Image (cartoon, rainbow, N blue to C red; front, side, top):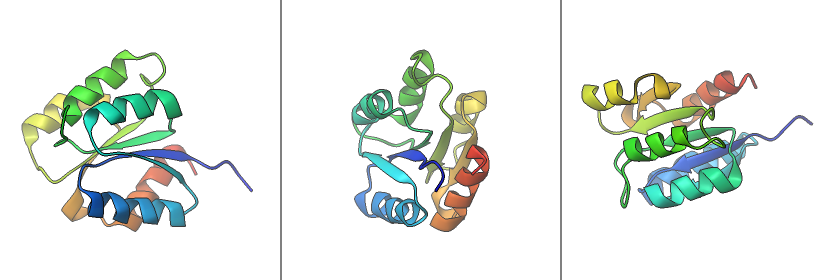
Length: 124
């Protein structure tokens, strides 16, 4: 049995978070959940995930703010981050820029496709 990869799933919408969580668990990933930006930053530093799936529209602290904080911490500065959002906002995409390894719209990527994309990013 190989390594179990850890995903930090940052999503404030519980049904959406659960949908992705179940798919990742089914595919043998460990999943850490965060429902707002503050929890996301703390969870990333505490759990040191292999990859972070980050929603942009979050309570307490928006996703772009979370991204800036994660990139400023030595523990998370190199952790791959994938934006997973409902907003096709070019300004957000430009601002995330080279700080992320992917930018997906929730309506365009099915849970299994996302798992496969994450696997390819982690060379699993």
